[in-house]
Length: 274
Image 1: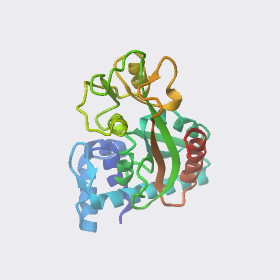
Image 2 (image 1 turned 90 degrees about the vertical axis):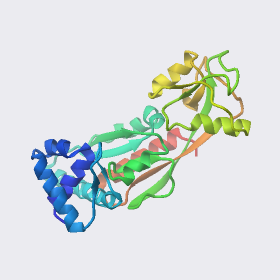
Image 3 (image 1 turned 120 degrees about the horizontal axis):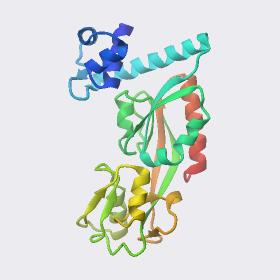
Image 4 (image 1 turned 135 degrees about the horizontal axis):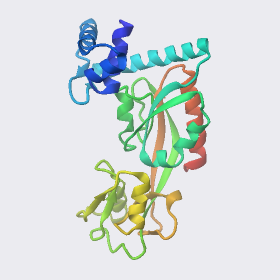
């Protein structure tokens, strides 16, 4: 396969559109279209859905991952020859990990540049599957095709509210990170063993603001145990929710990915429950 065509295909997926890829590659949009058409003809498959943003088809996911792996190895080789640094690594990670233990893992890797993508822990592997990122912190223990998986540990969550706020699971407003967030529903079902009607729901899509909303009395929500401080109180003492986290990354020989994997595993071992 033509390496220029592969690199162009990866740019389309990474940038989200043909026009954005053209700007990133310093070529014209027709040139991008021609390269993608030629690549699709060479493999005999449609590789990209012309949506907003552009996404790979099932056949395209394999090729965009291949293009990314080639680009990573090329950058590492050039770094070794030129003595330059800052190999770029794209990673998807859930908000609570990003807000707590994950960033310290990156602090000891000065030779890498990071492109971090935030998503719910149940969905971070989707970006890995699509070839958008090279590694992910995820709840999914089944390895994505072409990837290896290692267990990191479990993040423990406690259901908390400000003093005097919680009056019941069907009456007290519930705070969710976003519409993908199911932690509160899972905890409530585990505690009550029933399916309950939802109370009013607040969506607060930022980790620090999420905790602050609970402190201010907007409602109750699931918070990582290390962030539970006074005056927050548990709404169901003795109950908790453990979310197992795994590290998935491309299965390839890469010094950058190996260094990142080691750093993430060490940070997780210090911060997460076994």
